[in-house]
Image 1 (cartoon, one colour):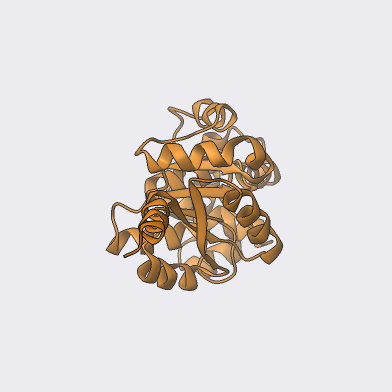
Image 2 (cartoon, one colour):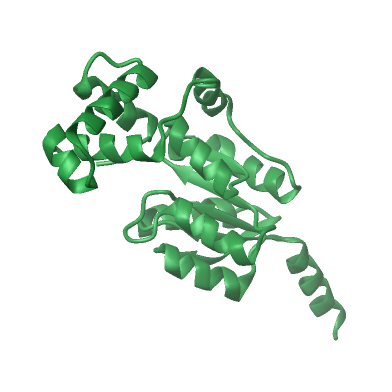
Length: 218
């Protein structure tokens, strides 16, 4: 191998190889422009769906994966879990517009090592890539504060989340009961628990709080 070729390969091997996952092509291009302008990192692949992300991860074995949460079909959290089933050491950074504590906790439990808001990318992204590549975690102050605000609170159970999601979709208690094959009195009990846990005055406020926190989605 010639001397200049050896130098080139050595330089490439030191660069942080990045996979971006987002269903908006313009956003992916913006991230690629930001990342590729750095001497120590480059985007090696882009995915627009969760399934594509898993396939590309297997093909490229990137050092860092930048993951959106809201995508058609397989969402970001499911994709993170899918990647980490086969590659438990995968280093994944969430890039999203959602700051709700429930979404943050789901992403971290799935294995994300950093959680960034898309409107903070110019300030946070490059440092986060380097930090996570160095086996660190990166949670910005605002995101940490969102988590801390709800630390120690009772979480909604899986069944309570199902009930609240159906309520948010416009179903009355009777309809919720029919869909979940449970009694209407049981639904009322779940609703009372939901109101207490979310400190909500009524069903409408409970839905509003749950949407803001990322507990449910519309």
